[in-house]
Image 1 (cartoon, rainbow, N blue to C red):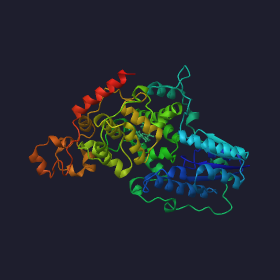
Image 2 (cartoon, protein in one colour):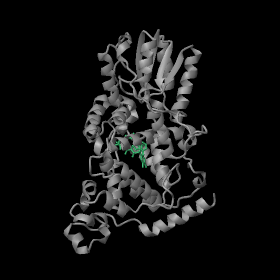
Image 3 (cartoon, protein in one colour):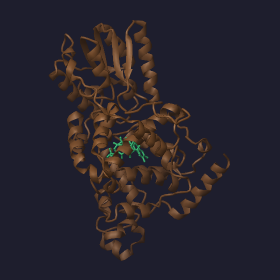
Length: 473
Ligand code: FAD
């Protein structure tokens, strides 16, 4: 009659599959979260916005559970050791958790399940972070989809009210139990991490998710029109909350579903992309090991050079839109979707740097980093992926800049050294007459870089490289 709910990327106390079921099954339900050293040890930067986001969200969750008569036991150590030990200490019959689909997490959970099993403790896992998981959406032949649109159509055809309804906890909430001794919240510093500028950038925890989602609901109708322009407040900025479960996917998807209209429809479609990439990773776990989805591109050797990669990381390529994008990432941990596509395409097809290096850089910097979505996005951009951009379609960074940041408003925010340029001059400072540059206080090569490559030349090289790889398949 005792159970333990292990929270991971589901940091909320409402609409929670594992918690809901545990409260139905057991009379005493304990809750725990582990700051997992097996993960934290891989983070080299001790000022990591994600750890701070999790810390803030865990703190809020702990308070919320205490208000409801329970508590959150917060541990610091290897989760695969801590959870079985805690289960033994509390004398629970079962541990409940929501499923995590990343290969490393699946492996960890198997180890935990085995260890618990030896002590006759059940390990029960639930679908929670998606509407449809793993093999729930398959083709008529029972195969996984390899193209997004038919997957999306099948998803939309299958979804019903029941899939979007919440896993309520209120009815049995009195079963929440607190441990006999007070369980303290470790400080961020004691975990070995530092404060960042996170709290100035975004609201954290369930309350933060609510605030952002409320605001987005007023804008959802215009999403399809506004989403592609980084200077506009177009998207929801909810990715980090979906990543750590401070917003329930059912709350998000049902809102779009019931609201209807073009904006909501397009937004729901983005949520389906998220599930499409989780599904792909489930069927192709080798994607997590650097393998291209399209095997013919697996061995493609990118000749790009290190200096160019560093210039890209630091936002000094000489292409203002790319530099603004990378500086947004470095300064805030977020990058607008249109810019992710532009920056990724530029690294791979203008600098000919291996997409895996970009994927790794994003993985270290993005606050919403998610293995499935990040890998999917990179392989899409590099044309090595499932349903990706065809390899012969190459973004022109200038055209993209003119189209999606027409007044250069976004560029001016992140590349202030170009702010004095007039109107459209900002997209191509290298074409601006020397007199105008002088007036604007710009010295190319000194105050702002000259372009590191010539787009037209690199375009031809990329086409030749991909052509030979695709031909040799
Ligand atoms: P909105 O436009 O409001 O979209 C709503 C939600 O839908 C997002 O929060 C996200 O959960 C989901 N979503 C939107 N677009 C995609 C997509 N293309 N693939 C999967 N899910 C999507 N998204 C991540 O969550 N984590 C990543 O690590 C990540 N890496 C990316 C890397 C590249 C190279 C590219 C091109 C895209 C990547 N994306 C990633 C997808 C997308 O850019 C972000 O989800 C989006 O910009 C987050 O902002 P938002 O919450 O305001 O999005």
